[in-house]
Image 1 (cartoon, rainbow, N blue to C red):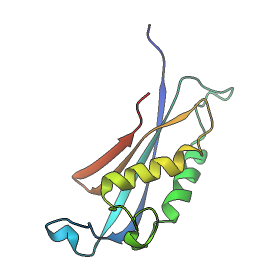
Image 2 (image 1 turned 90 degrees about the vertical axis):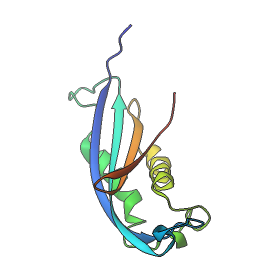
Image 3 (image 1 turned 180 degrees about the vertical axis):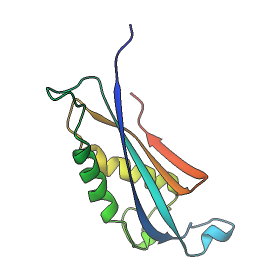
Image 4 (image 1 turned 90 degrees about the horizontal axis):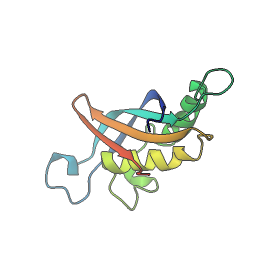
Length: 127
């Protein structure tokens, strides 16, 4: 049985510095990125307006999370004061912070973090 599913994606960005602990290479030294972040929401249905979710809701939720990391040294802010601020961990952190801001029946499906034009990490939850 085929189920319909709508997917909406918003993009934003933030700039921050970090260093990867226990990394043998240039990234162990302090450096920065202009990260591009994509957040995708999925919904099995549309509301009375014909919308799965207002893009404004998605953009606001993403902005709330990214504003706490923008122009910061990530290694000094939780949770990255204890765990490596890798693109993978950043994607998971954004997902976890944003997830509760998405009203049902829509759900946050994935967060993709681009640290450069040709390198990205994606986080999603199964089920």
